[in-house]
Length: 274
Image 1: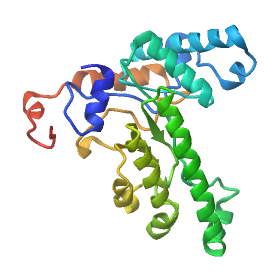
Image 2 (image 1 turned 45 degrees about the vertical axis):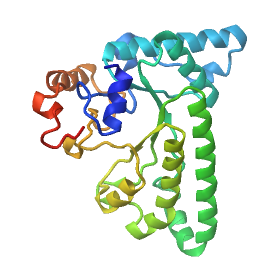
Image 3 (image 1 turned 90 degrees about the horizontal axis):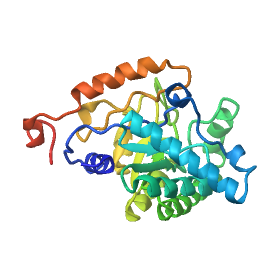
């Protein structure tokens, strides 16, 4: 089974040959291979063949990194829409459809930063229709962009608006049902209609809004424990800059030792269902 096939099986609640793995972002590239990814500000300074060279070399670097890591999906970052699509096409040229290619694609309100929290709270009460207008515009923009990205060679999206603190959601379940859920559901429905995959990410304690997140029908929630059924291994939250590479390697070694399904699990017994 190919890495992309393994991811697709898990995302469709099937049992692949082994537990797939990926990371929302892998920030230890310099520690792993001595180089970092291409950034948009670098690409903006290049034109013509030089721009093509930078895209090609970045794609080669990404393939080198993920071949070394043994991940099943690649999340692309740090470039604008055109740069991401060009990188995806170049990766396809290098390795075909081996990997599931993902980018960010959310268009819903996240937890506001500290300087805007009170303003957002007041607006929910004082001008809810204006807030809904903004939510609709964000949703429409995300849907249109996601369609272009899927047509441009991507397979799906990590929807990365954070909703929750460790203590619970920023919005109450009732507020979440008004200002987030309808728009998130339409974004995910559009992704599904176009044949793409939607993985919803949020940090924090999601339990008070878990029913609403599930009702929006993402293919997966990131990041949870393996009790959910169709399982993809990730660390929580990402291998972040500053983490020692050997610590990530230690966690990954545990994955390598335990990633194969037993015969009973592959037959659909227990909590796995084919």
